[in-house]
Length: 271
Image (cartoon, rainbow, N blue to C red; front, side, top):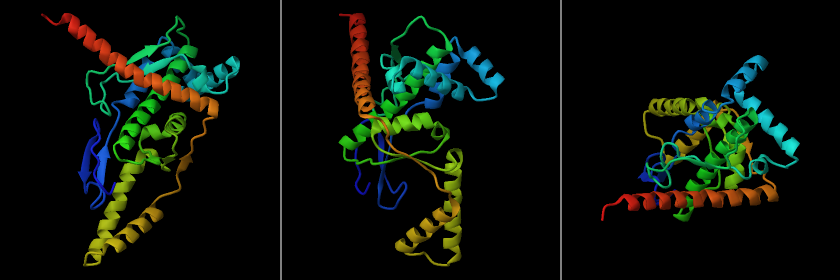
C-alpha cells in the first residue's frame, strides 16, 4: 500500500520490502498443508482411501472429490457447502498466526457422528478446506478494517494446485483468486526474473529511471511467464448465504474457545 497500515495480529507494515516507497503487511496461517494431511492420515478410512487410489491409479484427492460429488448427488443438495452444513471445523491445531496471534489457540470440530467410512473422511476433508477459506477471510477482513482494500488474491505454492480450495477461497472472500501457470515454481521463477532484470540493468552502465525500470521489469515478466488461471467467485445466492452463516459461526468459535479457556483458568486460580 502507498501508506503503512498497522493491523493487529498481522506482521508489519514494512516499508520498501517489495517496492520502493510502498508498504507491505504479512499475515498467514500455520501449517495448512500439514493440517490437510493430518485430517486424512488420522482418519480410520485413510487406509481404504490409499488402497483405492493405488488400485485406480489416481490421487487420494481425486478419490475424495469423487466421493463428495457422489454424496452431493445422493443427498440431492446443490453444493458441497450444503452437504456439510452441520459440520463446523476450527483449524488452529498449531496455534494462530494471524489475525489473533495466539499460540494457545487449538482446533475444534462439531458435528461428529459414529461414521468412520470414506464418506465421513470426504466430508471432513471438505470442511477442512472450508475452514482454511474462512480463516483467510478472517485475515482479509481485519486488514480491510484497518486501511487495506484487498480486491484480489494472487496465489503460489502447492496449495494453489488445489482448485477446490481456490474456489472456496474465492467464494468465501468474494474476490477473484489468480493462479500462476506453475504454482510450485512461482517463487523461483520470480527470482530468475529479478536476476535477469539486475543483469540487464547492470549492463547499461547507469541506473535506469524509475519509469524505465518499471517498463523493463514488466517486459521481462511478460516474456518469462505463461498465462495463469483466474478463479472467480461462483457461489449461488443460497450457497453464499450459507457460507456467511458458517463464517459467523467460525468467528463465534474463537470467542467461545477464549471464554472457555478463561473460565477453566479462573476455576484453577488460587484465591
